[in-house]
View 1 (cartoon, helix red, strand yellow):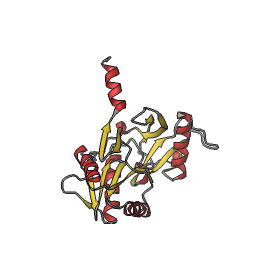
View 2 (view 1 turned 90 degrees about the vertical axis):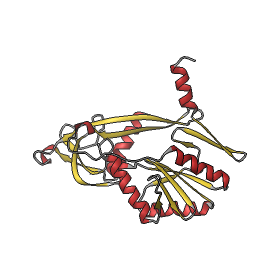
View 3 (view 1 turned 180 degrees about the vertical axis):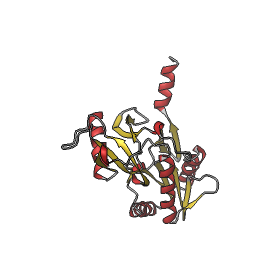
View 4 (view 1 turned 30 degrees about the vertical axis):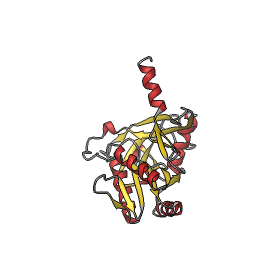
Length: 248
């Protein structure tokens, strides 16, 4: 499963023009060629622990970068997430969970960087010992990629008339709709489902590649169950891992 995820990741990035392949002798003199690191994880349903997706990211090794200083990227406070859920219960709002596809690499970069071609990935006509990746997009792993993505997304949101909160910079409002952002996971809530769908369409039209995952279910590892006018929040997988660690 991970081997398939690795191959898909590399080819998706190649087809999306996140990078091009060039010979090592084409790299400008003095420009570093950064090593790459595979990061792999299983995404599980928070309620059952069932694996539903195998993910692989080929990351730039940011530990080798020496000239990046601004790396901070905000995420929503949990109080803001609780507020959104509370309002949706009180006012019987609809909710939409949004997942950005290959979030960070959606952003073009202004400064070209170079990275080793991953070993084990075979492309006809390209030898990993002779070719490198010339990066054109915001590849995972760099020191400032989270900040770059956050600034890009916030600009897109304000372009389609979202207004940022003065209390939490990862909360936005548009009419009666509230939007909460946590890196590349986010949730919309508002009184009319067709309005939420219209906003998702506007986000896609603005150039954001995203998936509508339906009403809030598993968010940031927390299972959210809505019933009888209440939300029940539970991170059963986290609780189970803690109990296992302390042997209870």
